[in-house]
Amino acid sequence: MDSHTHLPIPAAGDATAIEPCPVPDCTLPVDLVLVSKEDKCISAHTVNLGLFSNGFPPASASGELARDGLGSVERVQLEETADVLMLLLKFMHHAHLPDLEMHPFQTAGVAEAAEKYEVFSAVALAKVYMKRRAKYKSRSLSLDDAAEVLFYGLKHGYNDIADDVALETIDMPLDRIVAQAMKAGISSHHILQWVLYREAHQRKLQRILVWSRCKKDSKLYFHVDSMEVEQVPCTQWARLERDMVGSFANRPGSIFEFASAVSHYGDYDENFDYFDDEPENFLMTCDTCKGFREEWVRYAREIADPLCGLSLTRMTLSSLKC
Image (cartoon, rainbow, N blue to C red; front, side, top):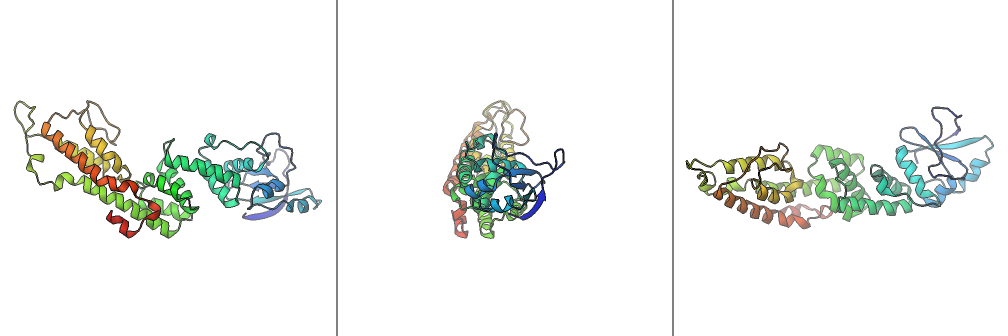
């Protein structure tokens, strides 16, 4: 905990009025006030904090506070938000544990606080929930959400969680994730592993994207569309290449989607979600282009497949040779 002061409980109507215990119908006396990051005061009980955690005052402290005879209650300033503290306190009562599925925006904060204050009932449930978010991605994760899960796994030694969510983070700009990682207390060793992991995917993606440029086959760029009556030079491959390279160039985390995107490009008279700027309706008719498209798909899968078993937490310089 960060600081301790003994202050009187504010009168009713005071702007700093103390929130009641977050557990409904709790009858335990309030002898401790937790002050959140945003200076919100929350009722707590030292007995429960001592019983259910190792990071809060032990139960023996309550007697001293009760005997001071001044009608005052200790306040403790904490770094967590009020929503996180209210949820965490529910794990420190003889009551049904809260369902973290109902609090997706607070769960990462609760998971961190549970580890920090060693609230073991919350540690176990939060870990299960964070693992589910990492592995199954039941809810779409933003880059920042994915980074939170990654940092949680790395910081507390849950390598399986970190490895499961790592791919979801590598589209984040380097300066942004490094700044967030340092703020979260992630070691320089793990930050370097993330950089190597991202580099491994970026290198493979670049090999895939330049495939057609490296292919020494003039027919790729200079052939006619057999479906055109006037036998004019075909422009369909140039369009496919432009759209695919433009859409995936800065998205190493999407490398496993590339083959599917190419294989479907131009098959249907509709737009696709793969592209930031959706192309206008396009139907590929050139048989030559379709043949090269299938070659590109096979090559993309061949290059990307070795990355499937890559582990962020086991990354070394030699891993870049995969």
